[in-house]
Length: 255
Image (cartoon, rainbow, N blue to C red):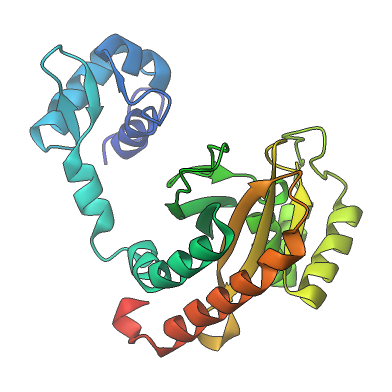
């Protein structure tokens, strides 16, 4: 793969362009895209022309650009996350019917928490944890559950990094986090208010796959003043157990 004069590959520059689009800025001009991706305008123009040709970027009638449907199509083919979502959706429906709040499914990916599904609750005033959103592992209930049941070497790796405070209540002391991880393994769930978003408490439980390896975290997002958090846990645990059984029973091709 040809490199730029800086030594960066074409693939790396394409990833920078595609990563520039997000929920807050889904469309932009070519110059805005180049600026956000940190690329020279001429380089961005050349790459965007090819990406538009292949449908990975779409050019709107007003000349602005957005991520193309072809990108979604390619990403969905054979995706482990897609299979996981399909297996989990009936159980997520059950949870949402019980808790009447946003319900999410998250996995670990490249050292962060990635939300792969969210069922929205129209009556909820909270608006976050969207599909394809990422959060730091230590700053989300889902992340702490995923970390608690991960191999010790991975826990050591995560807790050896600088841990930034996302909110004033984010836990950044590795020793305190280790204490919470032990409690999560003992109780089977976590519910810590305000560690990722000040206004909510995430109630997260683990989902296990083949070999009892941690596969995902199932989470209900409730307002932090919610007094009945313990009453929400049984529905989450029942659903997580159902997803775990489905994952373990699924043919290898679907995992």
